[in-house]
Image 1 (cartoon, one colour):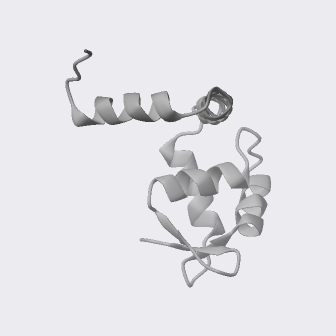
Image 2 (cartoon, helix red, strand yellow):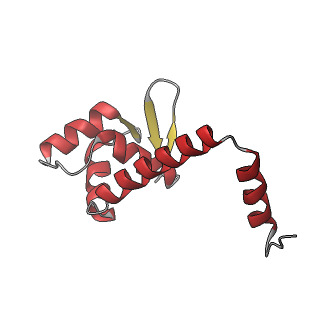
Image 3 (cartoon, helix red, strand yellow):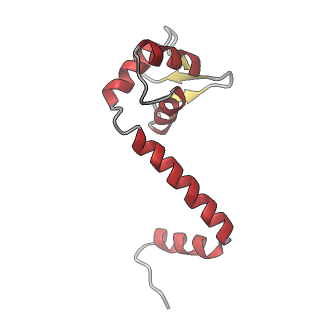
Length: 107
């Protein structure tokens, strides 16, 4: 019988045992792709994201993919996309997705 140090590790092991191999491989592949894209944008720091955010936010604290893309283009940034910026902001809970393809920036 195997012993686990925490309920989290037990839960993970049970999930893994109950997941078909094809799904496990697909999840692993997607996570590796996500982690790679995260590492690729690693050279973009908080300061640069802050500059992009400041220049693409409207007076109503609203941003969109288009406004971020425009700021990235104006700042001649090639290391990151507007979608990457949105992903980072959402993961950091700095924005709230609206129903019309825009995001509200918390400040």
